[in-house]
Length: 347
Ligand SMILES: Nc1ncnc2c1ncn2[C@@H]1O[C@H](COP(=O)(O)OP(=O)(O)OP(=O)(O)O)[C@@H](O)[C@H]1O
Ligand SMILES: [Mg+2]
Image 1 (tube, helix red, strand yellow):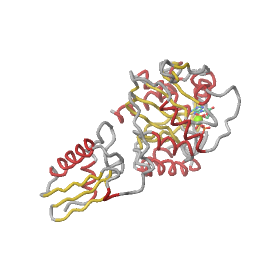
Image 2: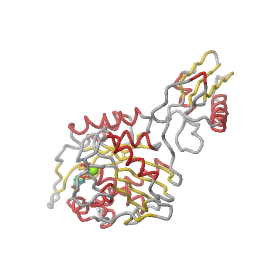
Image 3: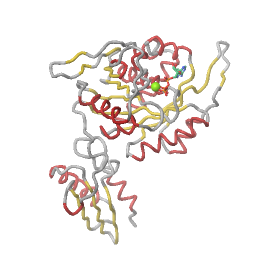
Image 4: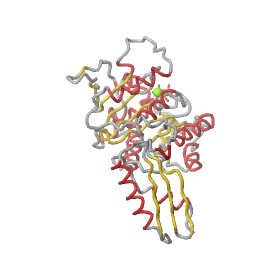
């Protein structure tokens, strides 16, 4: 007996044309029926391109026919605006893939101050050292920390095409609100302004050719997160947590946010796992292993743990991430291992 899940799983092999994501994770599959070997599915596209519809239809038919026990297959693909399915405009209909950027991965957490920005900069530098072309976008509009942590305080220059050229350091291209406002001026904006700025971080920045663009998010599930998800199709999310229950409780919200918008969760990083005193004694300030246990509970990959190291904090304040200043020391190694796992996840 074929179940709906069997059919969904089979359809996950069908990628949306031109994307690394599959049609199921994009939420295109609206209805599945299976009876006595006859499978019928219905999909709703957010485009009206006949090529896309045809390709999805024929690929889906191919994978379904290959399933054991399937004798007949019917695939209905409704283009956007098709009269029979005048569905309300999807909030994701405005999403646009950015030419030249192969993967976009967001770094998020439920709680603030758990080390998202620290993880973002070190992963960006780590991935760069592993040979990837990397960009790092700071989507924390109110409290950007990427300029400080990457040691860059210059304004973007403007290209002949009137786009912003992202400054770079350690081989990583960077964009942040911190480059666009004066010194310590606060940004006091409402949601629509945040949305507009985040759209411009993609449409008005000359990112060029990137294997991966990491996006550092502010804490929580607010305007920036929603705007990002509506602006570009994300290839995945990385969740950062500290080991204690107070942070893990909110992690579930972060995971839930990505699931709601069909963004695959690439894994969980436990930061500030433990501290080793100069005498070599290991102290688990926030407890230990909570991240790994939570990853197992939520059935997401555990990407690794990063202990508390004074060098990590100093590196952040100095603008020299530990992955750059001491790649072979334990702190740098912890991030490089996570970068390696992440790279495999995205391969
Ligand atoms: N593993 C670590 N060892 C030592 N210090 C750390 C570690 N991780 C983060 N820190 C320090 O903790 C502080 C908070 O980290 P960070 O700014 O990366 O958190 P965040 O989650 O991005 O915060 P926010 O929610 O405000 O964006 C920083 O001063 C950073 O240097
Ligand atoms: Mg931050």
